Image (cartoon, rainbow, N blue to C red; front, side, top):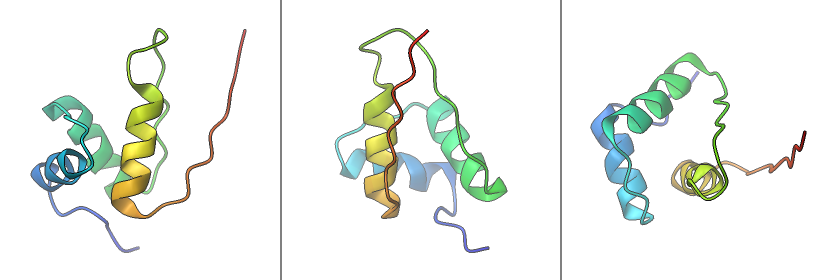
Length: 72
């Protein structure tokens, strides 16, 4: 499996290039998800940047974004 990121720093720089400022925690999770070939489930209150994170990672990696709306 080809990895899209070589380091956590590369994740941070890639996200910064698409105007998303990620901290080490977010960049670390994105890096590990890439390395392990696993998805990331992001949850939290409205307006905290969950969708923007997904859009930004998709843009940086060239991946297709599939957005699911799930309500309780």
